[in-house]
Image (cartoon, rainbow, N blue to C red; front, side, top):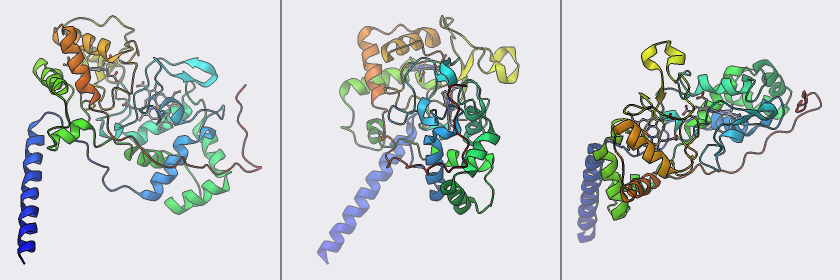
Amino acid sequence: MKRTVLSAAILLLSGMALQGAAQAASDEPIQPIKPPASINVGMVELGKKLYFDPRLSKSGIMSCNTCHNLSMGGTDNIPTSVGDHWQQGPINAPTVLNSSLNLAQFWDGRAADLKAQAGGPIANPGEMAFTHTLAVNVLQSIPGYVREFKMVFGKDKIDIDQVTLAIAEFEKTLVTPNSRFDQWLLGKKDALSKDELEGYALFKDSGCVACHNGEAVGGNSFQKMGIVEPYKGKMSDGRAAVTGKDEDRFNFKVPTLRNVEMTYPYFHDGAANTLTEAVDVMGRLQLGKKFTKDENAKVVAFLKTLTGDQPNFTMPILPPSSDATPRPTPFK
Ligand code: HEC
Ligand code: HEC
C-alpha cells in the first residue's frame, strides 16, 4: 500500500518536472526536434530504396545519397556538387536532414515541399541527368520494385508521382532528435558545458535567433545575405529567381543549423570551410558584430551541441535488374 502511494507520488512529481521542462523549453527561441509523426512504414521502406538507387540516374552511379550522403550529415561536404559527367554544380547541396521542417525546399524555395523537390534532381541534366519516363521504365522492368510499388500504392503501374511520394515519405524520417542541446531544453541541465551555454547566450543576445530559430534553428524564413555589409562570395539571385522581385535579390532560405558541425562547407556557394569562419561572417555581415576569438569559439561550441541522433537503419538491399532493364549509359 505504502509503496503504491510512494510510486504514485514519484509519478506525479516526475510528471510535474516534465511539465516544468516543457514550459521552460517553450520560452526558448529554439524548440526540441520531435520524432516524425504518422509515417507510412511501407512507403518509407520503398522510399529508402529509391533514395539509394543509382539506377534513377543516366550514368547508373548517382543516387540521392551521392550528394546527400547520410553517413555525412546528409550532404556531400564539397563546395558545390558534382553532377553527371563530372559537371560542376552551381550551388552548395543543403542537408536533407530535417528538411521536412523547411518552409519550402532549395536555397530559393522554388519547390513547395519534399514531394515537389524529389522529381527535380532525377531530371536535372546537371545532376542525375535522366528523365522521369526513363526512370519509371527502369523501375517497371524490375520485378522486385513492381511488387513493392503494388503493395504500397495498390496500382498496377508505377508512375513518377509514386516515386516522389515514397522518397518524400522516407525523407520525413530523416529528423535528428535528442541532440545535447535538445536534452538541455528538455530539462537535463548538465547536458551543456559552461562555454556552450555562454555560446548560446551570445547566439541569442547578438541577434542570431532573429533568423535562426524554431525546431530546425532556421529553415522557416527567407532572409537577405549581407544586411550590414555585402557578401563577397559568389552571389546568386536567391529568392528573386522565383518571385522576380528586386527586393528579393540575395534573399536565401535561412539554412537549418541542426547538425551544422557535419554539414561543412557553409553558405550557398560553399565558400566558408569552417564554422569559425561562418560565424565570423554572419556576425559581421548580418549583425555588424565582430566576435572576439573567445566569443567566436563559444558560439561554435554551442553550434556543435545541435548535432542530434543520425538516421540509423540497415542498408537497403536493392532488387536486382532484370534482363529487360534498360542499361545505364555512363559514358554517353
Ligand atoms: C548531383 C548532386 C545531387 C543529387 C544527385 C541530388 N541532389 Fe538534392 N540537392 C543538390 C543541390 C546542389 C541542392 C540545392 C539546389 C538549389 O537550392 O538550387 C539540392 C537540394 C535538395 C533538397 C532541398 C533541401 C533544402 O534545404 O532546401 C532536398 C530535399 C534534396 N536536394 C533531396 C534530394 C533527393 C531526394 C535526391 C534524389 C532524388 C537528390 N536530392 C539528388 C544536389 C543533389
Ligand atoms: C538576418 C538573418 C540572419 C541572421 C541575423 C543570422 N543569420 Fe546565419 N544565415 C542567414 C542566411 C540567409 C544564411 C545563408 C546565407 C548564404 O548561404 O548565402 C545563413 C547562414 C548561416 C550559417 C551557414 C549554414 C550553412 O549550412 O551554410 C551559419 C553557421 C550561420 N548562418 C550562423 C549564424 C550565426 C552564428 C549568427 C549570429 C552571429 C547568424 N547566423 C545570424 C541568415 C541570418
